[in-house]
Image (tube, rainbow over the protein chains, first blue to last red):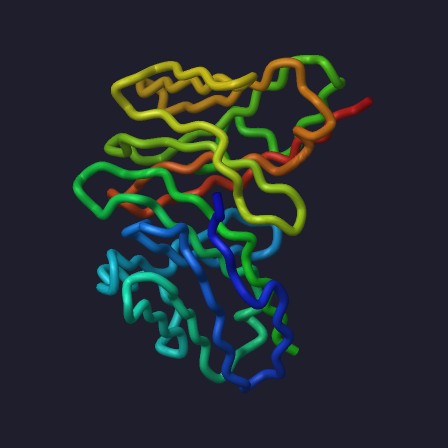
Amino acid sequence: GAGVSQSPRYKVAKRGQDVALRCDPISGHVSLFWYQQALGQGPEFLTYFQNEAQLDKSGLPSDRFFAERPEGSVSTLKIQRTQQEDSAVYLCASSLLGTSGRTDTQYFGPGTRLTVL
Amino acid sequence: GESVGLHLPTLSVQEGDNSIINCAYSNSASDYFIWYKQESGKGPQFIIDIRSNMDKRQGQRVTVLLNKTVKHLSLQIAATQPGDSAVYFCAENKDDYKLSFGAGTTVTVRA
């Protein structure tokens, strides 16, 4: 079956530009996560949605980062006024269940590699 | 997870041999652990998971061992193949749903 898909796969932005990264989770998955992965590092949590509700945005690095999932399916991560330190791979993951005190398996997409010049 | 003690950032293994990848985790309250494989240019791929009420779980050619006493997790891969070459991450659910990832171990399989 279809997994998590992300677009674009690669994005080059000039410093100061706004970017929007899209995530299509596995159909029917309640939970959606965004992670940031710097070169040579493990993914780091950015934000979490349960359906359309953003329950946790504690990992967003600054107020230039904004995420939404208006209909509880597709999600967009937007970065305003990009900086060179925003260069990283942005990963989206989804899981079947919501938070019910029991962690569920997260399935990852291929990621979007963002390069800010 | 964290890269301390037994963790090695790289592992070179002969094709056909067994591989053991180690990981130390940090939070004694974590109750869910998961191993991912990440190939170059791809997202993390689920391998196997284990909950804290178990100490061993087996999949196809893989076994995960959990030692809660010393907060240690290991992944064993039987009969390692060239396609197993990748970076392997362990992760723990530090805060319920959030996964906290270790630094990763790069496995290279020698023909």
